[in-house]
Image: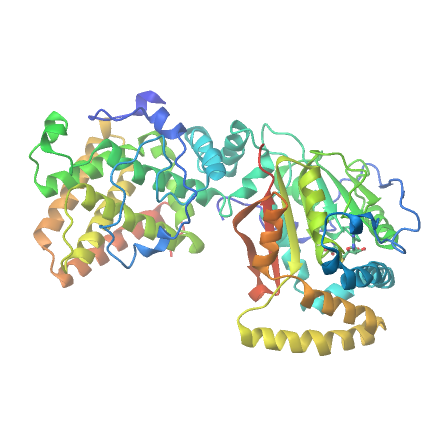
Length: 310
Length: 276
Ligand SMILES: C[S@@+](CC[C@H](N)C(=O)[O-])C[C@H]1O[C@@H](n2cnc3c(N)ncnc32)[C@H](O)[C@@H]1O
C-alpha cells in the first residue's frame, strides 16, 4: 500500500469535521412537487425512437417514475436500514472502496475538483467525497453537489450535513432529474458519481447522455450499483435471498414490504455488467479497463468511463 | 536527465524514448498467453514509432497519460503525483487518472512493456551481420544475450533511483502475476532478438534462467553506485557464467532458480519492500 498510505482513513466518516459554517445550501427546488410526479417530458415519444418498442414500456415507465418517488419518500428516514438489508451490511464497505478508488480531491499543483453526485439521496457518497479529499489529499476546496429527484431524501441529507458540521461552501443539495440535469452547465464537472441510483432512473440512456454533457473533457463518470452475481449457484442463493428474505425484512424492519419488493425487482431488471458497460460506451464515454469492477461476487459492481478529450 | 544516459550504441535519446507513446488498439489477448506457449512464429518483425507497437496492452489515451507521466518519474517517483502531472501534461484532468484501472502499477507496467517492445529497435541480431554496428558482429549467442540484457538494463538508467519503488508496487499481491508475465515476455524477446528460435525441451528452462539472471541484475543495479554501472555489468557476467556452468539440466536449473529467487527476496526484505 505504499501508493495510498491513507487508504483506510475514510472509514470514520462522521468524525473530525472542520466546522466553519454549518448551514448547507438547499438550492432552488425548481421542478414542481418534487418527486411526486416526476415523469419527464413525454415529447420524446413522438421523436425518432421506435414507438412500437415504447408502447407498452411507456405506460410502465410513467408508473415507474412516480412509484420510485413513493418508494424513496417512504424509506428516506429508514434509508440506512434499507441499504443494510439489501447488501448484508456491506454497502458501507463498497462505498468506501468506491470513493477511495476514485481518489477525489486536489493534487499537488492542481485545481480543486467539482464533483456531482447524482441520485445522491441522503448524501452518503457526497460526505465520503469531502472526507476523502480532506484527509487523503488535504483539500478543503473541492465541492460536491448532491442532486436527487426526491426532496425528502435531500432534506434528510441536508439535516445530516448540518449535524456533522460539513462546510456549506463545499456541499450543496439540489433537486434534479438525472435524465436532464437541467441546471448543470455543459463541460463543468470533473467527477460524476451515481451510487445505487441509476437503476431507478426511468430512461437510463438519457441519464448517461446528460452525464456526458455535464462532464469536462477528461472528466470521469463512476457508477456503483447492484449487479449480476456469478457463479450460478451463488446467484441462485442470492435470488432466493433477495426475493423472499428482503421484502420480509422490509416488512419487519421498516414496515414497508412493497417498497422493498420494488427494490428487489429493480435490481433484477437492471442490465448485466457488460450490457451496462456497453450503454456507457454508447453515450460517448470511454470504458475504463474492461468497463467494470465486480465487488463481492458481483452483488455490486463499479463502472467507470472517461469523457474523451475531443 | 540526459547525463544519466549510458549507452554504447546509437540508441535514440532517452528523452525521445520516454515521450513517445506506444499504443495499440488491439485487444490485450497476448497478455497472458506467453506464460504457457512459446510464441515465435506469428510475431511482428520490425516496428516503427509511426505505428502503434503491436502487442502493447495500452490504449491511445492511456499511453498519452502514461508516457507523459514517465517523464515525471525521475523527480516524483512511481507515484500518483507522477500520474497527475502526466495527465495534466497530456491535457487531461487530475481525475482522469481513473482511466488507469491499476494506477501506479499501470505506470510501472507501461515502462516494462514499452522498453521491451523498443529493445528490438535498438539491437536486433536477426539482421544480416553487415547491418549490425561494428562491435556487435560475429558474436556467440551468449554474448548476444549479454549485449541485449545490458541494453535493456540501460533503459532503466534514467529512473534507476526510483526503481525500488517499482519493485514495491510489482510485489503487491494483485500485481505479481502481471509482473512475472512481463518478465517472461522480456526473456522471450531477448532470446528471440539473439536469433535463437529453437523450441526444444530446454525452452522453458532457458527462459526461466534468463528471467532469474535479468531480474537479479536489475535489482543489483538499483544499488549500484559505480561509474557507468560497471559493477552491474560485472554482476551480470557472473550470473551468466553461473548459468553456463550449471548447464541446462532441469534439477540444476531448479536449484539455481530457487537460490536466486531467495537471494532476490532477501534483498527486497532487507530494503523493507514487501515481497510474498
Ligand atoms: C437507493 S438511493 C441511493 C442514495 C445514495 N446515492 C446512496 O448510495 O446511498 C436511490 C436514489 O435515487 C433517486 N432517484 C431516482 N430516480 C432519480 C432520477 N431520475 N434522478 C435523480 N435521482 C433519482 C431516489 O430519489 C433515491 O434517492
